[in-house]
Image 1 (cartoon, helix red, strand yellow):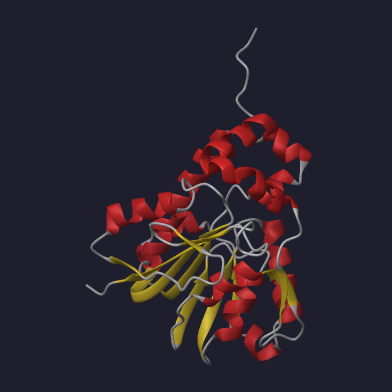
Image 2 (cartoon, one colour; image 1 turned 30 degrees about the horizontal axis):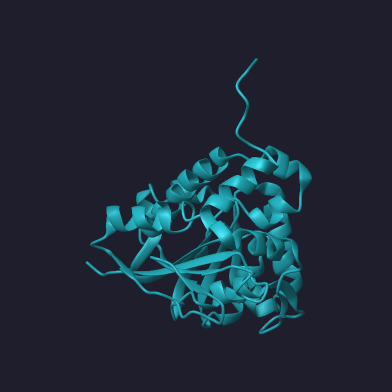
Length: 264
């Protein structure tokens, strides 16, 4: 007989029970319950519904008065809408999404919700944000960078039987490596003095504080932690804050870390 795969619903439950201990049952119940969605309308043609913690994450990005802003993994577009609605008149937003299908959805969301003048200052692109920082032409290009990285998204996994059956701890490790590649590249693309916000909707510290710890290990002399303010229910971590729905009135999960790139 072959070796049993350490995956599926039982492995998922065991993994997060070890992580959250006695808190897990209540957190799991909160993850399955309806979330704290809000209709974000500020500066939009019509409201867009998204998690209240996602609004907080996008709003904590410090924006430049002019120049370019990058939303590195922008689909489906909610956070791009929040950033675009807050841009100064002299700034432009590059909303990037690698997946062509998700990029079409992103464009549709921007077209539908942004006023014409704002939409004219938002460009949609499709490059690999994990590789772009390696190009000299992209180094220091953006005054602000929002990186809402692809992650385990356990709230969605719990609600999808097929995704739950396919889940494995190896997925967490794989995504953490991808997140580090994206975060390192995003930091290289950030201009000196600029702000970078790193966010995920993951539960595990391996996908949250883990990539941030690597960032400070590699670029510590250039990176300055700029902790965002913690809204009601948000919990402090080593490098950021974490919204978990059992203590944040249904919001999240959402991890948010903010750093400033020092000028050389």
